[in-house]
Length: 424
Ligand SMILES: [Zn+2]
Image (tube, rainbow, N blue to C red; front, side, top):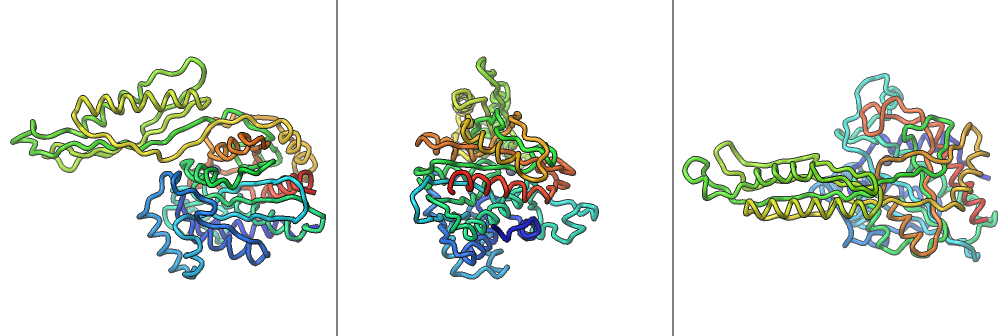
């Protein structure tokens, strides 16, 4: 029994779509989630009860403070902001009071740093729910994931007398983009008693009506910022007195981009940003690089990481500049558990509107839910990550991206189907 229908999910999805927030800045989103979840009767965990600050990556205090001010301006009250504290995201722990397994689902809530198109043909503009936060857009479907999570939360309350058994945890994770938010959640310990874990993604270039039960080839990845610090000097009078950070960073870029590949599997490397220098006639004293490496598995990724760091250190030494590195995000690969894959497959086949359940696909990207999955698997739990196909007018992370809203109910039905199987 449930009062959740696709219209309810669409309404929530549109509400979140209208105000997208970037990773670690999801204060309005988190506040709205807490309000809705508590109105349903849930106990909601926030802040450091689900986030271990020691493992927070890629969080800009300036962006966070700006987002907090914006949240106040949008009418989020001080008490609620105080409860959220410095770390966004929240979780529901639903204890049925009856013995049974602990099941956890993860829904990511952040947006992408993309300006949404202003074309009127774009459905969010046509229907009046386009982004009102300039420069930010739900261009990866996480607004849909958030809505599905809320749907599951209400379903839990409505079906507690099924009777449901065990404990069900719903994790609303911040900062998936840039693979930043999962590690601090894993390190909070909230998943350490979990027997079954599932996570899903809308779209991923799979059409509406198709569900992929167990995608493969998630790439392990490490995102690093590298900062070279040299010494400024007059470029005409005493160039010899300067230490050139720009030149160091350029050399490091060339060396890192030409890292050898690994014989045991796929690798990737990218230097996506290089910023350096102060002015035309100054020996550049500062340079910053945004680097990422990926590998088919953790071993290969660690190899790429070590080699990239070795190159950067060597360059810093040869140019006599200082090197500072900071980990900005991380994810790993994982192997789905057959038991969970079978459940997802069985359930998806019974969901109206699902025409085909595909066993696998090549994910070929990185997703930090893998860190949550590894944590669950390390304690003997079983995990699944599935893809709910959705026709999309443009690729993920593009200004014209949109989801097929009819698929929200498909996602909701798979998660609740898992609960009927695992917790009933
Ligand atoms: Zn995504």
